[in-house]
Image (cartoon, rainbow, N blue to C red; front, side, top):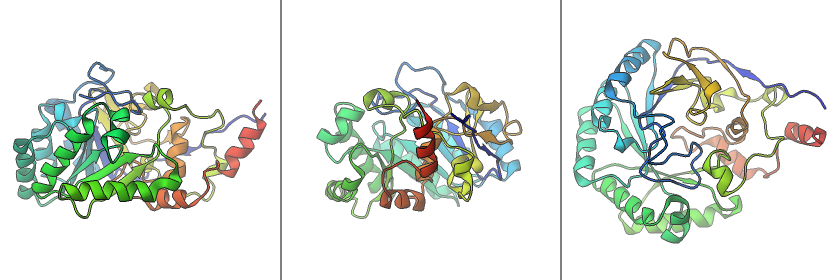
Length: 317
């Protein structure tokens, strides 16, 4: 069997910066979470304002164009509004949330921040089914009702949240799923919803809920020949946590994905050695707000592994 050769992806520019503001702490314990966030997971802690501010200042020097805030659940961080206010002074911001901790007061504060800035403030809400029966087995009892209430408050506050769902059904059922979901969103006043379907990342809790990656599912150097590297987040993005700067949000809890303490340290490429990299390779635009031409192309293609993966699969015992 030939030795697997992992491709090296340079950092072309630092256009996007993520902040893991909640670390791996979350008020929920979703059964598909790829970094196993929960109220007890302190692998990564809250990123407080005093830790955040130097990285934001450094990012301006590097020419970062947009910012994302994730966790865990960002709204458990007591500094989140101060963090967003500082960010919106220099660029557009997106918050990824489960929307279960929103209130009318918090949405009003978000609207004030949005209206006071020349830059956009986006909210991405994770809901993994169009009903309690489809969502709650994954995200927890009662979470569908709480998340939909949060979406309703955001819409009333003038936001157009991006609804993201992890695909836990056959890809052929996308159209029927989206139709059901749009109907439920229309019931709460969100008539033209923005929606983003995500493939599952078979690490963390998702590997236990469903299954992990097959042993052939890696990205190889041969697979990168002729591939559009701009589809991969790590070619122009990095993520900051309370532990330092990492290559991407998906690998933020992997020790070898930590690149240093500052953005200057992280201005280096990375070898795509993790199996989760194969999901980004297949679908593209996985973490960004884009609904993703790469994801749509993957949706139209077969579910079989790429040809080069098949070669490695055949060579394995």
